[in-house]
Length: 192
Length: 228
Image (cartoon, rainbow over all chains, first blue to last red; front, side, top):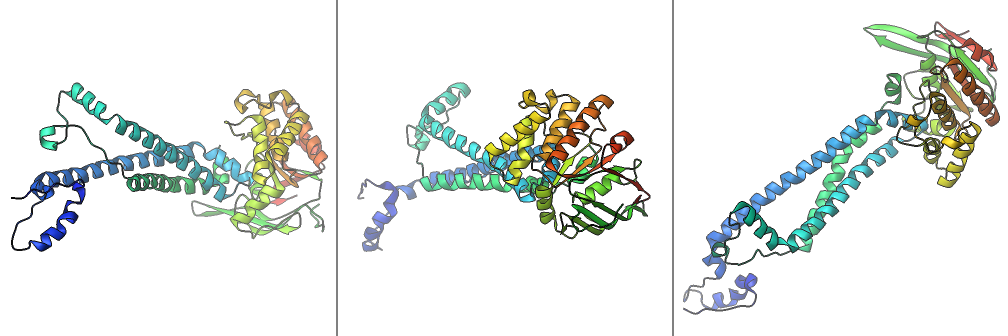
């Protein structure tokens, strides 16, 4: 048995490819990923589950913006009607409510980014604190093969998630904004 | 009374409006004719339910479904689409309602500034104009107050200032002092008339008050869907 060490374990398959080609039929090559395939499958499932849970959280946040804006439009119906009689266009009504919704979305996203960065920086302290409070071992080095919770921030993923959050916030504003724009001033002021 | 003049600020010809209620057709306006000259203030009298508000809504381009012709400042406006009607409202009309309908979250000054910003007036110029108007209505000390901190008469005076902020060619008022006591109403109406005359605007004022109607240039009565 020959062991090969590398300084870049993430590229192990790529690094071993030329060796594997030369030794085809004469040796069996097994890398560290194949040796721990069960663990990696479990981590992959965990990643998918976390993605679903976090997507649902984003969906709830979007519905919060949607319901808040619908309530805002309902409470401001009279004011909207007055603005329409003054000559405010439907487009300007849409712009007002989209601006409100997107501002909430952008502020929330920026706050989320900052909290996420702080959480990442103090991640081990957070893990230790939760372990202390719950009495559970959240990070078992014998299973994880790492003594501390690692982190890998991918700028492309961060930009993608930020863009998605802002796009969803924008989409959530459209229904209430068009509802506001279609307010009939006569109907509203007649029943005041 | 309703003869058509070439320079009329408002010229309404054969205006009709019907509503369906429980399968029954109700004709509120039946071929109504009205002409108002530039600078003329006309009282619109009529019992409740006679269609005064419906006429104001038609002339104010707030509602469609009317038959006949409406010309404002020489422009035929009855066939305009919603966006074009909004532009005419913004550029040429001012509204005053029985209830002040001020925006509660804004100060008196901001309420008068707002229609000017919608028209595209620069902020500084709009504020100066609003302060001037509110000052002429005796509200110099109240400009920063929200509507809830103002009396009924003061609220209605702010509404008058707001209606005149963009120097509209035509003002439409629906019982502008109908919600005030007699003394306050007289004071507010004096200031309203003085400002409208000062601006040389035309006005159509719906009222039940015969005494107020006598102070305007002319009065018309709405009866059975036509003016007499």
